[in-house]
Amino acid sequence: MIIKRFLLWSRTAPPAQRAAAIGALCRAYVDGELELNDRFEAETAMTAMLDDASPLVRRAVAEALADAAEAPRHVVLGLASDQSDIAATVLARSPLLADPDLVDCVAIGDDLVQTAVARRRDVSAAVSGALAEIGGAEAVTALLDNRGAMISDGSLSRIVDRLGSDATVREALLARDDLPLDIRQAVAHALSRSLAAFVAECGWLSPERSERATREAREKTTVDLSGVARADDVRRLVTHLRTSAQLTPALILRALLSRALPFAEAAFADLSGLPLKRVSRLMQDRHGSGFAALYRRAGLPDRLRPAFEAALGATQRHVGQPGVPQLSRRVIADTLMACATLPARDGAAITALLRRYDVEAAREEARELAGVLADEAALASILRHMPELIEDELRPERLLAA
Image (tube, rainbow, N blue to C red):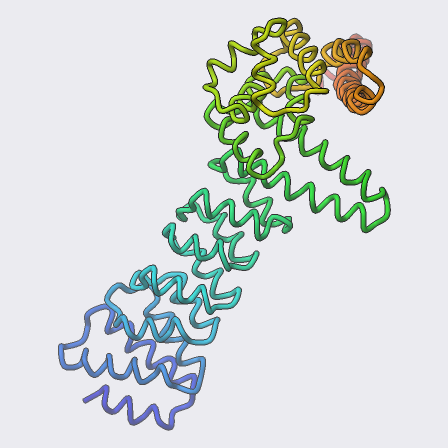
């Protein structure tokens, strides 16, 4: 009877009072405080309130039922289709919403709705896939930050394709410890495209110089990433680079000049279709027919083979330190010497490329050495003033004060 009187009273009661009353009724329903007949009437009242003209009333129902597994499912579904701020309340929290419900809401919802779904405690791979496909930057960032979300590699790749130009999305992607190496490289690629466009628009560099600078920076990042990765991840990275037309002769040559042999071996294995172990043996046969046959099978330009052979030989002679690969000036110097005898038509471009690499390597070395020299100067200054500091600390008045 009390619920019947509530329905009669709600016809004329102010919105704030209606909201308070329906909220209390919803909580009583969820807590199991109603008799069976009253529960049926309460369910009717909650359903009727879905058509209340005041958002205050509908929001009160959403707040009261959002976390409840005992709530009437059809009421929760009705709330999920309400205006965005009300729908977001149940979309972010209700355990009654299944994947098809959530995917449907993502498809027709705005940023607020999509973000609410992305922030759920658990997000399935299917729902993550829908957000990756059509979600806005805010929702996708929330999804990437949600450690309870299952996100497939395919969804991560789709996010990079769609939203890789968004700095917030890139930051969220790179913050994930589980981000596969090939997708991490794709994020770097997206960043380089954004930077190239920005620099060109500002007129700081010509489009051609901007494109070359960003390409070489991207290739450096790619080789750096490979140096701290497992063999399987390097092979996967190489496959990604080939399918995205980034596995260029210049990139493979940079890997050799950086003494990143695992990357170079994986690249030749991918291009030639030969097993990695066989590729490794063939690359050891630099002066015989082994490497020449491998090089031809990989489909790389024949005019560049002397540079590759020289770089490979120099890499094998000058073994680098474990860790992130770096361009080696000794390897570059040996390669430049070998290319000096090439015909002008073939040697000009490769020589120019090698000299740019040499400048880059020299700058890297200078940055590291400058840091060391500055640290040594700071230490020398401390040691030079140490006796004065000790004498000052041992003065009688300081000892008495202590």
